[in-house]
Amino acid sequence: MKIEEINIEGKKIGTQEVSDKVFSFKPRKDLIQLVINWQLNNQRKKKGHTKSRGEVKGSRRKIVQQKGSGGARHGNITAPIFVGGGIAHGPRHRGQTRLTKLNKKVRNLGLISALSSKALSNQINVFDEPKLDSFKTKSFNNFLNKLETKSALIVHHEGISDKFLKSIKNIPNTKKLNVVGTNVYDLIKFQKVLFTKEALKTLQDRLTKWVTKITHTILY
Image (cartoon, rainbow, N blue to C red):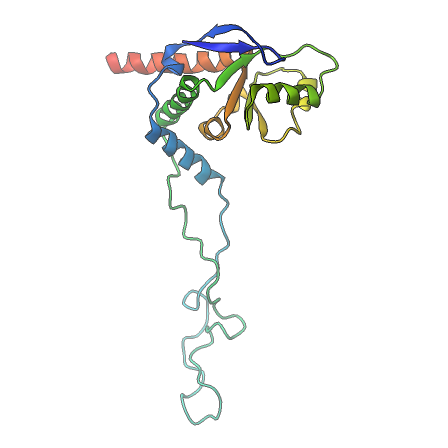
């Protein structure tokens, strides 16, 4: 399969050959959704947890007789109206209700499915890291405008220029991501995915090696 290569001016300058095992895989929507749910579940913070009147420490003895005292009717001291009693209608953390663990095989297949889905929809492009010393945020913003995309994910390689990373830092609806952190949620969330050449090669080599290893294990 081939992916279009563009320059910093947004013009097509050629194509980049990529592995069919990674970018022409028949997308599995169920795996994509499964991995996204797993990612979002791991991002959630545990909510506060309060104790009900049945969980706090205290005597369960009725503190006054039901009638004849001239006061209100009360049960025991763990009632919510007493200091040190239980909390009525407070937050109750019931644990993680969704998937908390996911096999590496499923995660990788979900990633391959997401990449293939984007590639088959022509929403992945490759570009060279600009070598301009005076490269600014405005330059990259103009580049994205020429692509006519609402949002973009920029996946870069290790050792990329700090000036380039700073130039894309404050652009709305964009995100820069190291190739090591490439994930299903961000691939699906953003409309356009832009890889640097080195990042694409690194990711492709890793996933191709994994696919070959899995295939060899199944056959033998």
